[in-house]
Length: 202
Image (cartoon, rainbow, N blue to C red; front, side, top):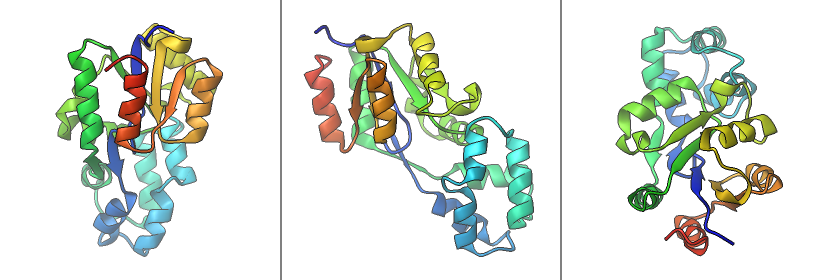
């Protein structure tokens, strides 16, 4: 089998770790509800899923947070507090840099939202160094829905075994496998690097 032509990375828990309890602690002082209620409101909640699927604009998402949690600040303040929850997974960022150094096209494929992307672009220089991006909120669909995988194929110009895909969620990997992608369940950086090497890219 020939090596893949492109590598597609999930973002959260693959290239960047994140923790929504950080947001909850930071905005707690400006809200009328306990911190644990704020976590439930924003961490993989129905409200967050509506935002990340593109059903809500940033302004509408903020309005719902303001109503439910009683946040007393404005959108600019909330944006700073909400977005700044990420930390780099350095071995995976180094893996991406190695692939770029070998002129292998790389792409981001993520269930995410506008505020998170805005913060990541501002704080993590490596994020600029991809050939393309497929974000759930921009396509009105979320992994593992087929529509979003079709968007990746359009953006990359590749399909089936030409795509090597790294994701930390089994259901997302299974959806890639169903399309013939070489999809890898990311568990540790060493394991993912070994899979990329085995595919003939290192």
